[in-house]
Amino acid sequence: MGMTPDELIEEVAESIVSAKRIVVFTGAGVSTESGIPDFRSPGGIWTRFSPEDFTYQKFLTDPEARRRSWQMLKMFGTMKEVKPNAAHYAIGELDRLGKLDCVITQNVDGLHQRGGVPEEKVIELHGTFKWVKCLSCGRRYPIEEIMERVEAGEEVPDCEECHGMLKTATIAFGEPMPVSETKEAERRSRNSDLFIVIGSSLVVYPAAYMPIYALESGAKLVIINKGPTPIDRYAHVRIYEKAGEVMSRVLERVKKRLN
Ligand code: NAD
View (cartoon, rainbow, N blue to C red):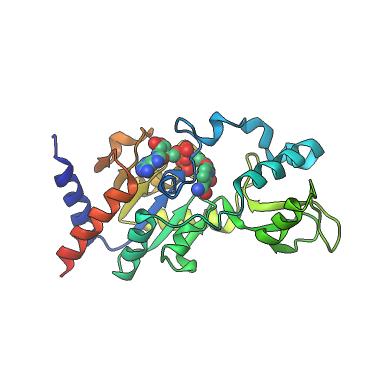
């Protein structure tokens, strides 16, 4: 009982060195140090917008909801100026050390890839903000292209090809989860021997089942998150500090041990 912060970091590093299949699971909290607000912290997105206004069903059926949705996106910009932070880079480094099976992320910001994790090792459970897709013909557009049209005054852009409804390739509330990503994430979680949660409140399902699958299969669970989660008591190591700082220190210790 009562390990010091240094001992906790050391314990995570040791677990990483001895593990064979490490899955890192991330949520909005891994990106707040990059300047993207999360949903549930004070000042988070849901303290300024109401989630009921942004469901998939509303988007499909209510032109006003589509307008509001594009307005909100305009406010956020295209995330081009946003940069990966120390936590993303540390996870990229884990991969270069041969210590990463995959990253399962709820984020749509693409920062893991830009932080050095190969594309094929990032499972995006809630889609991506990189693309906009036509809900009728399936054509995909880079987000920048569509946001330019919105900036130029189109309130609700439509498909150039078929005039169908356009929507970002992110998963909205009430929208079905992507089938192959969800299956693959479950498989990797069950197959892991060390599962590291970074920056997620673990209350959004089915994403939050992933650490439970890992526990069921006997994996060690590490949780690095500022706020509480419903499964804190099952964690082998629980650290309540900032992801960037913690992960840089963890990686320092891992490299020392591997040398
Ligand atoms: P959440 O907002 O429910 O929880 C974020 C958690 O991260 C909180 O518990 C908070 O205490 C913690 N946190 C915040 N900053 C941290 C830091 N620097 N270090 C450590 N912990 C920190 O987010 P969630 O669990 O990801 O679920 C919300 C949904 O929001 C997800 O489905 C996700 O798709 C979406 N989302 C994505 C982005 C993004 O792509 N960057 C941003 C906002 C929301």
